[in-house]
Image 1: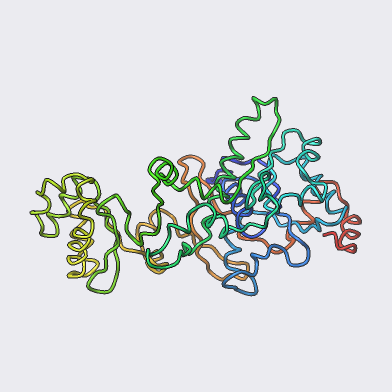
Image 2: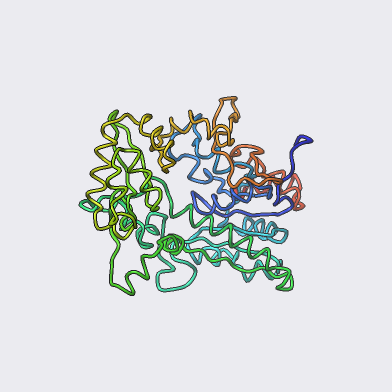
Length: 401
């Protein structure tokens, strides 16, 4: 670390990650980005499956570079008694343990919270699972896609005349991971008031998704209304939709505030609609949603995207083109905000990674290293637990590490 770099707000925090794929690793990744020491436990025979997901470079997933950045990789066979003992030793000195196995797996391996907290009462265990640690569905396997379906997100995503669709990324896993971080930090804050004792943070993927569903539940409970798919529009809030431009591109316009609506109508040459008393409020505009979308759509289709954006910017109407990743990489605002980190893989290949969020003014997060090689830190970490060179040789011979 150079003299101008701070260690991060979570420096000194010790985290053990027993997760694979997305939810658990993303949770621990965020802690690592802000300075926590994260020891990622991986199976010796291949490690986290995410290492081979999606696009590969030199046999390793490019996703791995960001999902495992700043983590230490330690290989441990969790099904072996000697491997379980390694985790127990790590847990004795940890502040947080993150896991996303199916409920009951840690108990089967003797790594349940009751046993680990008996040795380390201050331990906080973040448990991410499909359905949570209790309830009739707790033992079912649950991925993020299932959480999105059960949590209500899939039913409202897509066009009304077509089957539900996914958002294109693993939102269920990622939202659950963020709740895991929030819960861990809450538990850390509460620890002094609890006599130094930690606690379990129980995050269910379907509940994380359900928490995002805005007014869906009270609308159904009070009025019987079932929110469903509405394509690109935002029903009941008008105008807010996606419109195609003359050059075959798309922009989103959100002009649902009363004053913004009037500015939009003036900008697109419809002062008559700006002055219409029925359209002065959102309630009136909702009754004429199709008309307003048609008017705005016709205007958008008559101009190129950049011309539309310039017109709307002058009118101070919230609008933006729909970006693909190439747009993101070229965008000057992304660049100015350090959201496109330039790094290098182990073989020297340049690679861009997403910048770290949120941006702290005094103690920002940073990338210290990219996703490690499988078991890269095994000897280093186990040596701090008192394992000798002879111990490590024996554990490797027994396929424990």
